[in-house]
Image 1: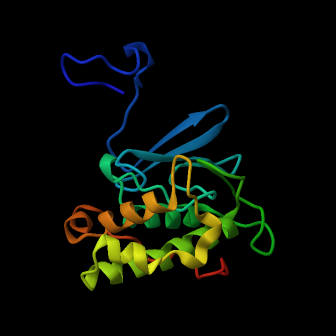
Image 2 (image 1 turned 180 degrees about the vertical axis):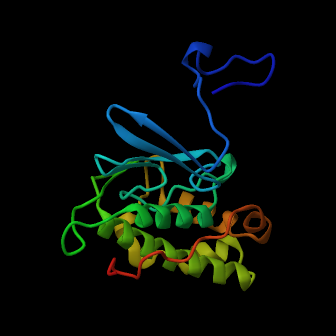
Length: 201
């Protein structure tokens, strides 16, 4: 929200946050309930937060989880595909379903419909499969053009888009770039799945 010296900020200074934190989490009590602010480094960008309202049992995930398109990995802003998987697993860690893996903790995505644990698990599994395909392609030395031609996301067309703010082509480029050895070395390792595929415990 700030700007380099001599440049105009995009927001007036009185709109800047006056309470910040530098650890992975910050707890506070607000509006009659405990609230956890959880930072996931190098995911959608390098400055993402999810907010867990403990009494309401609601997670505001922001763009760490969207269910309208493929994961939005903003590599120019420090985002990384590994971080997205870490974020999705963190959300699943917090979620507790009410009955038969449905309802319970609700997740508000950055874009899309209200979700529960089963929805996030389904999305996480898709992202994990695609991540592994891209990682294998990078390991084999495939170029971006070869990866695009291989159409590694072909069986997940429901998340595809040819227009709008986040297209399939943009995702493929970002995923490929973020899984290059230099980018992976900077990003946190993706955490192993917290709960088995399908959301079963």
